[in-house]
Image 1: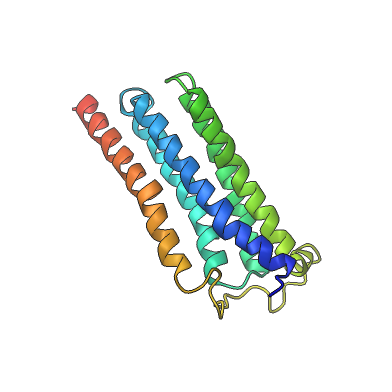
Image 2: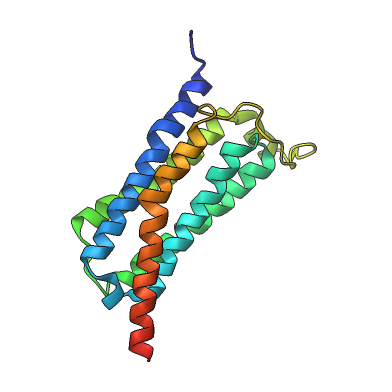
Length: 188
């Protein structure tokens, strides 16, 4: 069976870029824990981390669930821009308050570049929709239409969500709780 280039790119997104993004998020969380984020930059930075995760979860969920069209691309571009702004704000806020190790800097490299690569790949796969976006040919391209056959097969989304829950969601919830407890302790 010969795969089309778009199929190969989709597989790269599913089985390379998305897992790497989760692994980088886990490494970043480990670095926050090692520098005792709750004792220095605290709750404010921890909330920024959660916001960035949510910002990236939105386009990932949309692209895994719906056919990519102008609407999905607009959402992807808006969330990517917002993610970049919060990432800049996060490092600007954290750097004078705590050590950012070489490991954390490497994790940030992946956390910042992978969304850009994923967005570029989505644009390449859906080039006609990107042209529609640029030429304002939006008629019939701003609705949500479910994908008929899920990318990666029926088991991919549950497995990926489980992986992300273990690698990122639960650790960052733990970080938020840890920072909230310290914030309450300092304020109280």
